[in-house]
Amino acid sequence: MSRTRLAPARLGPRDVLHVGSAGLRTRPLRVVLSALGIAIGIATMIAVVGISSSSKAQLLRQLDQLGTNLLVASPGQGLFGEKVKLPKESIGMVSRVPGVEQVGATGDLVQSVRRSEKIPEGETGGLTVKAATEGLLDVVRGAVGSGTWLNEANGRYPSTVLGHVAAQRLGITAPGQQVHIGGRYFTVIGILDPLPLAPEIERAALVGWEGAGALLGFDGHPTQIYERSTDQTVGAVRALIPRTVDPQNPHNVQVTDPSSALQAKAATEGAFTDLLLGLGGVALLVGGVGVANTMIISVLERRHEIGLRRSLGATRGQIRLQFVTESLLLSGLGGLAGVALGAAATYAFAASGGLPWVVPLWAVTGGFAATLLIGTVAGLYPAVRASRLSPTLALHAG
Image (cartoon, rainbow, N blue to C red; front, side, top):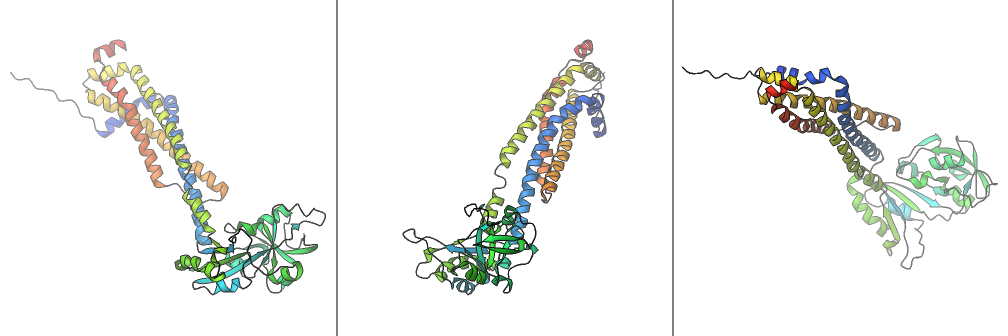
């Protein structure tokens, strides 16, 4: 007489989900506390990546608006360290370089700008006075926040346009007020918006080129020449400017790229991201340890349930699957909460700073996948331990 071998019952996906979530439904407070560690770790990682990406997106947006085709020529040092001056004709020389589309210039003045004559001349507040050409604002892609820019008419008279920082430090809030320059009062006719590519202009009081010569003794030698060229000719123009301005001593002319600072900042935006991601990873591992401890305690508390299921025909594999599923659900809930918290923190930071809200998809998917991996690892040992319990001993202990 042959014996018929009984086949164990199979668990469908719905059954696995039901038995795997049983422990979570009966202990909601423990679930919340256990998932909290996972949530904090994921939230930290998502927020770090999101904030860094939002800041970088803002920098790239600024670069798109301001362009990377701006070059600034300024006097360098002579062979013996003496100060050199750019020729008065250098503005016109640069404008004739092939590829150059726009040219503007400033010239440094020895006078200081103060709120009134009662303030000592030595207290400059880090502000300077510069002569400016009419085309300067277009070249640096600046904008007048209030008032008007220098032109052929008002540039001849004692009038000035203040950079954004200069206006703040002088306490000037609107055009029409006056500041003291070179022993006389100048009327403020405009206040500029911030200029990320020209911080030296932000901290200056700008006077018309002709007015600076007639009223302040400006010698007409430019100190900075700003030029815009086509994107394709930036490199060639940069090489030609020194030889054009001073053919005999091109080393006396220094050419810089103001946008390189923003480009470097964008490239190094994630410099501290790796460190903070490491901290988030540590928090995530701590959360994984918490999940593992919760699952071990759950196994100890549910030995009677395990013994009963084993006596009713559940295989060791089904017991392992039950507890791994429970661990995955626990970690998954924490991961979803962490993604939501991290995205919310990034949104709050972006909204407060006027930045674009950017949360990379790879960070969300990668972070959630990490929680599932940690959940699987954290649940393996408790699941194996549960599957090895003897049904008889488990029921006796229950």
